[in-house]
Image (tube, rainbow over all chains, first blue to last red; front, side, top):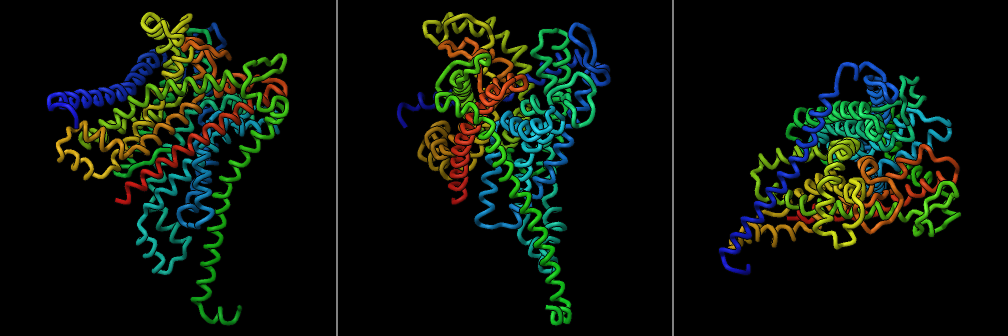
Length: 283
Length: 319
């Protein structure tokens, strides 16, 4: 504690104000981002955006109906693969503890979670695009599922661990077998948290574009099924934003507003409504 | 096995339930093990698919700066340089800002306000990176071109870092976008580390006559040092692996320039831009080897971050 009291008190006041200022700066960036998107996106968003296909450069108008449907398809299939997969793996980590294998799985899941999304895209490219010789929505779904699995696994594990041991003991004491205890007592008790984690995980992969660039690729048209190149909102935002056409920029802003609306609504709903009172760990 | 078991119904029950348990265990085990399998597949893919360039260039790949798809001569140095420089710039901005905010949220703000602000920060972390890219492209890039970079040039222009023509696109803008994207991670992990510091530490410092800031900076922050370092490494890993936002503002030019105004390129950006159009095994292999480099880089950084964060939470829970 050096210096005289006045100096120390002023340092105290200055530094504490600086930390408050930093916090205001950090939080205001959220409102700045939302403000810009609502201003520019709102001006560009119209009914056509949801119902029409993209037009070739130079023509004014059109929409991104195919990208909205494509995103739903890609993310839907990814969730169909990734959610049950991650959930079951999480049940194993929490309920069938063993000293050797579980720490290894936990470590590898964290590792997988930290892998850059673009590298996950390379994996799906090698696994699906190369053998089938075609970009496809399915390849994109697999890339996103690989990102989703470790998130859901670790969150499921975390929320199941928070279920009190006494609940398990009560069920076992009543004669339930272990798997019945898990299915009818432990999982329902942790279900709110698990569901929250799942929604947040899906919201996170829904905004990913890097792993889709060379798996799902892009499509200016409706495209066929999941085996065809499929348009998605994040990739559309990217391709439209970097193109040199003003009308495409307008569309990119509109798509940005729609995407962030979906992601933020999912986040707010999951965190405020579903997860009231439980703390959600970061993915 | 048959006669006594049938005679005793509870034994049958025990046996069947045990089979159910075994099945449940095996099914969940299969999925847990598949996580390891997926990761193994990933490493194997990166390794085998990058074989052509690994054999052709060896370790020189990392230290040469040519990137010529026509003559199939590839070096990773400009991309590694761009990735490291933008990430370092990002941390330079986001560490003080993030740590300052974390101190405010854990030490000063009332719990209710702190929780509300933290919620908003978590939302900031949930924003997709392509949205950051979109905003940066249309707002930050023109701002940097018209005001930010000319200002730096006129004030700090004697440094080689701030010389040369001004584009708006470049390493500096890339680093700034990354800083905004890493701040939420640094804030929320540091805040938890600070909150894990026992209350007695603060009370003891205050009782000895320390001001609030002195108690925070000299007692609480050093106590949470490891967790804060962990948050910085986590932010670094995030910055290294960030793709879309950087791709949209870095300028996409595989050059190594001393000036931060100059356009550059990052590992993730070059894969994003060129992979779908890469023709020829060697070109593809070069990009995949870049992916392998990025993968190893982020694994090491993430590993360090997790070790540090685990160490602090353990320390806190002991008391």
